[in-house]
Image (tube, rainbow, N blue to C red; front, side, top):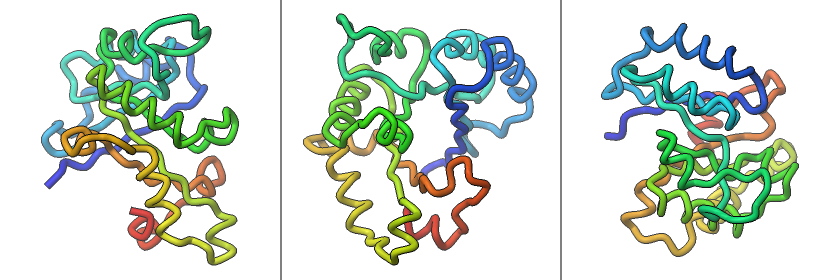
Length: 188
């Protein structure tokens, strides 16, 4: 059975100093990695100092995004190769905010997933469940499944098992609402 993963995503919050301070506060209080994977995804500026602060602890530091190219004239993007070289081993892809605000498509997420895997990163692919669909009673599981199938399209079986799927209902992000256990189970 897979070890449960608990991950937090800081989005565009915390300064580098605040991030390192937080890591130093919690790193001695985490369960062993063989019982639970504990991870924090943080803004790119904080990643290297957080990795350094987490040395010797079970805490995993994750990137919130990466591009699908290793290098090139892509101002503002983050190279998956550079992330791995910096000690990052997980990256969140397809977050609903990236899909909504930056118009990221399943095709683009698929390219990013492939680039992450090629560079030794474990992609965590987010799958949205919108409140509009739920309220309209249109929460059809095929919509969720089809999105994931597009995001992992053309991956080998060996690659697919390295991908973590995160059920991420956008109606619960920053709203004070959360999915109850039956809703989370339905999404999963």
